[in-house]
Image (cartoon, rainbow, N blue to C red; front, side, top):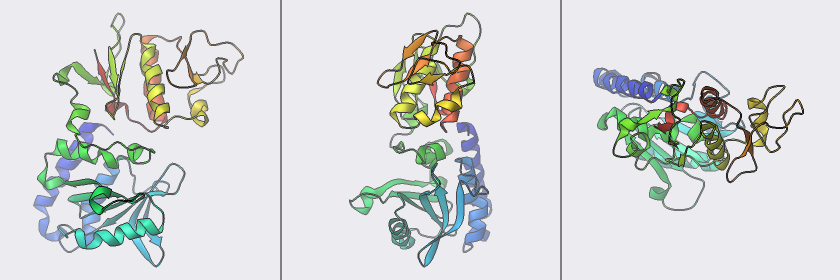
Length: 300
């Protein structure tokens, strides 16, 4: 999901709220179909895929409107949806209790416009548990999109989702945003120098000195955030060659031609690759671990 596509979705929802205010009020089903489902889809939660989302999820004697499933198959969050402009506070405690009873980490509640998310796994006051509160109709689409990245599927299903307390800085890094380019849009041409810096969704930055550093630093970031594990190595290997591994021997039995240790990990990268291949493999690493190259920035 590209950032501009998410922004476009939010712009559409804002217009829909303005145009259909009356018919959305007092009707939860219409609100879900017109406002909630499209946003969940834009955030990577395909509401038609039972491996990702279970509607009308039963908990005890009740149920919630959506359960968002983790990579292991169990719910990572529940969402209760109310009709447009319905105040959320009178439904909040019940939704949180549902999540607690089922030992689900996150509880969200929305009326299609306002979205609130709570981390119910720890102690603390309700205010301390709240990690997201955004009203789409009251915020610029760009700001809403960045705030809602907390609900983006690869982010929410990671063990340490990024909180976007200052989300503008995530995609507008530094005083000169024009010097940064999304990895998804970055192109290689012969003779072009490699980027100088790579920046990830949580604003972690690494220096880049060689083209292969793009893949190396990506592996470092994914591993440190537990998004890449040893179980994933085969996803990036062929019958003859590994991309990353804990040993420097390819499946064919040959040693890595140019093994580079990945800093802070037990991994090695096969760094024998061109600039073009490094870009391709960096994107494959991210996408294979559920991360979008659109949210990774390169500085030339």
